[in-house]
Every structure is written in C-alpha cells, then in structure tokens.
Amino acid sequence: MRKTVLIAGALALVASLSACGRSGYDRARPDEFAVARAAPLVIPPDFALVPPRPGAPRAQDSQPQNQALDALFGGSAVRSGSENATLDAAGRTGADQGARSTVGDPNTTVVDKGSTTRDIIAAPEGTGRDASAATPQ
Image 1 (cartoon, helix red, strand yellow):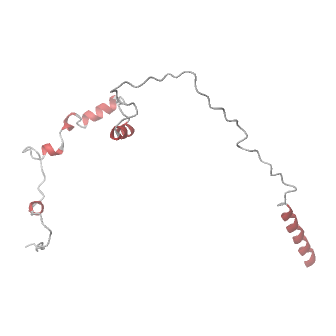
Image 2 (cartoon, rainbow, N blue to C red):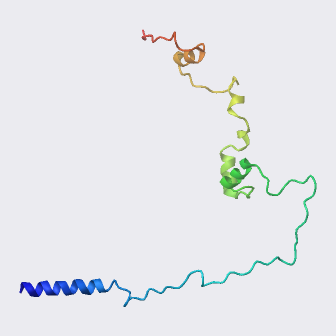
Image 3 (cartoon, rainbow, N blue to C red):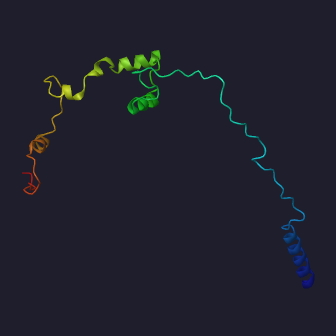
C-alpha cells in the first residue's frame, strides 16, 4: 500500500512538472505595439494663427493667485439666489471693513481679559534674562 501511494505521488509530481514545459502551452502573445499603426505626422494645410499684437497681454500669462482663486471658488461664476440671500444675511455689505480698522474704534465691543494680559502686552521687549516668576498674592 505504501508503494502505491509513493508511486501515485511521484506520477502526480511528474504530471504537474510537465505542465511547465513549452510543448503543451502556447506562449505566443499578440504584440501590443503592432495592433495599431501610428499615423504619419502631417503639417495641417491651414494655419489660422494670428500674430500677437504689440503691447497686448499674453493669453497664457496670469497671476498664480488669480488661478488659485479661480480653482477654489469657481472664478467669476454667477451666484444663485439662495447663495446671495445667505451672503446678505451674513452681512456681506458690512464685511468690507477689516479688523484692523475697527480695533481702535471706541464703539468696538471688547472683552476684558484682566490685568495679566495687559501686563504681558505692555511688557518691554528684551532677551528674557531679567524675567522672573511672581507668585500671586
């Protein structure tokens, strides 16, 4: 019985190894470069190019900042009615003033952060060599 199992295993091994040979397996594959012919390069008969006007801006020249804004916000696309209503409700017209112009205004509402913050801001500039920690009293 043991010899039969050994002989059957050897035959299975030989059969599986014979599948790796070239005799029963066709390795001819199509050449992917031979499938389509490359068309010859041809100069077009009609050139509709206009020479550039002196002093006119180049069409391909634009500021990178403008390109980024166009990519992020869609350029000069028309806003929908709901978008305009939302912007108006958010205060689009009052948003022209920057924070720096309203900081010194006496009508600006500010939050009192206490004397510690004021002392830090009013501290003289230095290297920090004379700095010391004070304990609160």
